[in-house]
Length: 383
Image 1 (spheres, rainbow, N blue to C red):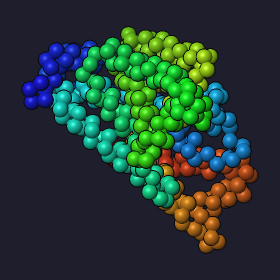
Image 2: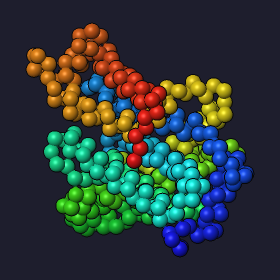
Image 3: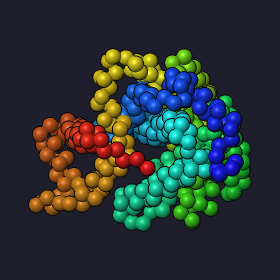
Image 4: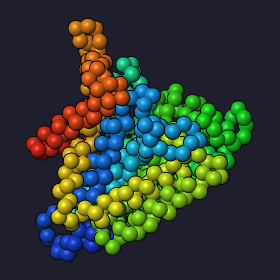
């Protein structure tokens, strides 16, 4: 590839896909295609759910669906937040890639930008972990996994959707087979339990000492981002939305059936059934939103969700930093942290359960107001 340019046949395919999905026929057309409200609404709903799960203050009164499921139990709503974030990262990839192609960006430049984004997300994730734990913490957490998984998916964008789909599904089945069949030192046999499994062994023996604990999870999470890119590309074409719903249902069914063979849905080690179920349900939801919102006169009713979806990085990082650097550190005149004083005031006013909801929803509302102000001023933080 001379000068890092994409192969001619790949560029032709990408441009054809762009024209078909956006309705742009003339290559000289300068108008941008309309954004899909459904994608922004789904991202916003995922961010809102993340804020709810991360800031719930109900202790024993917390609804079951807002708690993470123990090992071996059925997946809950709280367990779907992170994989849906990864799905969102994939949803936007086709549009970013087609825009890059239209602007004449070379593949080398595309990879360079994707690498830089992954690098900064990893650094930001490490900083966030250090701030939360108030000590040096080097590992792969939420932002780090999103960055690395998105980078892998970005590398494959020149390939046709079918090829990318085959790669993602093959990676998930290979990952699942490795967990089920490869022996783990100690038991000296294949074992898949909460405290003994291949991923945990690899992390403990090889990756933890070098600050890369969680690296095996890049395989299934990257597969999920790739699947998200397929969903995003398909939703741009109205006739393919039903295919996304059917495909999502098939994926969710695969995940459910797989658990019948002793392979649990686990967020801790990102098991393949968990990825299939989360990706499938997310695909169904976003395709349903496409039918309900895209091109509809009532799409503006989704505006509150779009506020959350416009600045997802700020929505994730901002509240965490405010909580761990201010609310949990600064104190009131009586020595209580600001967070404890706020919660006590709500409990005194509305009772323990009502006060817990008042604190949580108030925190989300304040975050929404800040995000709405940023959106109104056109301030969007992206990496």
